[in-house]
Image 1 (cartoon, rainbow, N blue to C red):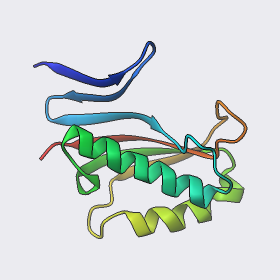
Image 2 (cartoon, one colour):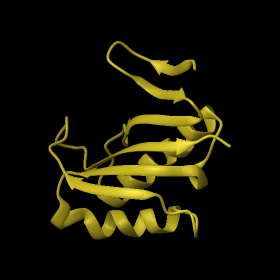
Image 3 (tube, helix red, strand yellow):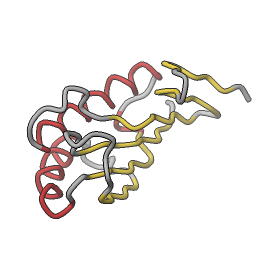
Image 4 (spheres, one colour):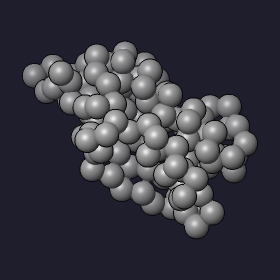
Length: 117
C-alpha cells in the first residue's frame, strides 16, 4: 500500500494517509491566542481543515491525544470547547496528558487519527 504525505516539512508531515487511515501531526493555535478556550477552538478548526484536506471529517476520528500545559488549570475549559465540537455519537478514543510545550504561550496541542470514508 502506498503512503501519501501532505504538507511535508524537513522533520514531519502534517498529514499522512495510509491504508484508509489519516494521521495528523500535532495541531495547535499558531497565533498562541490568550486562553485555553480560544486556543482549543483554533486547534479544532485546524483539525477540521486538515481532515477536509485529507478527505474525511471529525465524525470519522478514531483517536485523539490531547496535550495540556496545565491540566489542573485548563482541563475543564478545554473540555467545554471539545464537548461542543464533537458530533453526538462520534466521540473518539481519547487520552489527555499534561506536557511541556515547545513555547510557553502554547496551552493545548492535539494529535488525531481518523478513518477515510
